Image: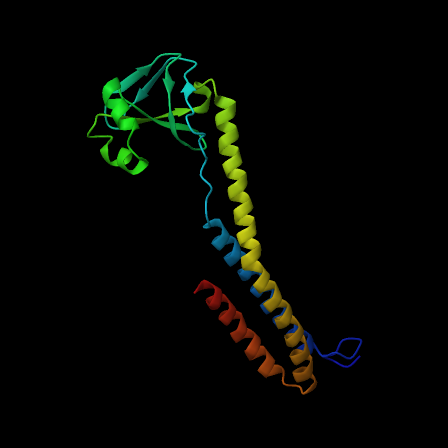
Length: 207
């Protein structure tokens, strides 16, 4: 066997050119996948939808601390209205002044956030297991999480499909050109193009 050639007559330089090109293609797909995943993860979020008129009931005595203020005692059986649901529990507004709280409840969401402090209404946070409706609250949160996941998967597919199409085109055209220039023994040219292409792909996706 002639030095520098494989058993089928392909030179080591040609093999190296194909390896460098395949690395470029792999980097293209990996960067495209990462960019699509990052874009999808910053996509729309489905917030938990609290049913109209829903109220929840404490099933145990709780001492909850106001933000930067005192601690308030909530007795078992206390009924509150959830304002928001997150992965650890529930947000709700509360005031011991029933008349003030009734006026507060008639405000829209934006006005509630702006005027709560001035009206003496405080937002509290309590875990799901503090309430009799724990299973319902967890189901509401999980439904929102599933919808968010579905939206992100759809966004990822939309972002990554063009990468697949471009990557396949790059692979087919690149293989042909690598073979053609290798037959002309333009290996140095191929190495330079592949190395430059590697950095162009990286900086292209980063930017």
